[in-house]
Every structure is written in structure tokens, then in C-alpha cells.
Length: 225
Image 1 (tube, rainbow, N blue to C red):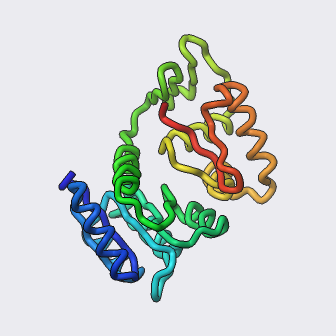
Image 2 (spheres, helix red, strand yellow; image 1 turned 180 degrees about the horizontal axis):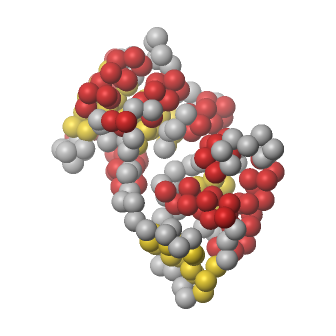
Image 3 (cartoon, helix red, strand yellow; image 1 turned 45 degrees about the vertical axis):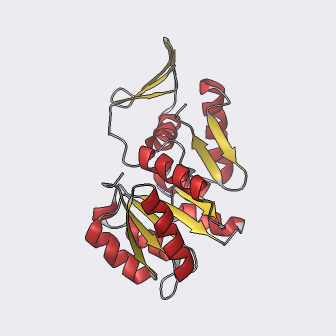
């Protein structure tokens, strides 16, 4: 995967070099920086497909770095993974709210890291197809706002469809309630977590309970199979 550019951002020199070595052994093209501001500059320069961030960084922490990279037009399709020793739930939630696609804890396990990176590569920047298939039987037609399970037409409200469309835009990505609130309800102050949970519940009733996965205290995701 030499054409896959990965930017590794970690202030710990040993970790940075080890991650770089692991990724190069997996055939990736790797660039590194030791701080957040340099990472934003480098990301704008090289347009990496994947960015790997530590939370604790000098001058600009990983969360703010993630937000700034996410806002770059050059990185609109980039996948962002946090690889960090910060295990607190609130840190993981903040990372996902900032636009991260994955959150992995140190210590680094090379085979697991390569597997997670390959998975992120597969689901990063999916083709903008009008029709999306998930698994063997679920078909979503974005142009007509229709959903089928096999040959059966499933009736969804506009918000239910908008929520489903967000979840399927990146299968496997976890969306927190805050992100769902911003992207599906445009930050409407009258919308609370309970309303979001009810819409998730309705989708599960219509599509099958196993399709949408809850990560307790973090958010929701839908798998591609």
C-alpha cells in the first residue's frame, strides 16, 4: 500500500519511530511530526489518507489538531485515528466529537494496528453512490429516499432516513450523540439525547436490532456486514 500516505503525530520519539516502523513494514508511506501545529501544516501539504494522533501534544493538543485537520479541504476525505495512552471515556468522546474515525489505546500491538489501519483505509472516502448495500439484503437508495430489506420496502421518516444516511456514510465509524445532534438536527437546541435514542430505537425496530451497534457512553455505529 505504498500509495497510502499516513501522517503519524506523536510527541514521544520512541512511540513515533516505532509506529512509523510498523506502518512501513505494512507497506504504507509514512510521514511524522512531533506536535500539532506541524501536523496541520504537513497534512495540508501532503493530503494524507490516514492521520494517527496522540491526544497529548505540545502547543496544540490532539483534539484541537483533529478539528483543524478535519477542516482542511485537502483532508476532507482523510481518516483520523487516535492512538493514545489516554483511556478516559470523556477523552474518547471528545476525540469522536472532533471528527475522529477510530480510537485505539496504547501499548501498540503491531498486528492489531495494521489491521485497524487497513480497515480504516477500506472505509475512508467511500464512493458517493446513489445506492448503498449493507450486508446481503439491506439496500438504501439515497436519490429516492427509499430503503429495502430484500424485496420489502421499509417506510422511514425523513429524520430516520437522515440518521441512517449519516451512519452508512462511514460504516464502522462511531457517531456520538453530539455529532448526530449537529449533523442530523443541525444543533437544534430543542433536540435532546432522548429524542436521538428514540430515533435509533425506531431504526432498529424497522431494520433489525443487530444492524445498529451501541457503544455505551460513546455513541452508535452501523457495520457494513
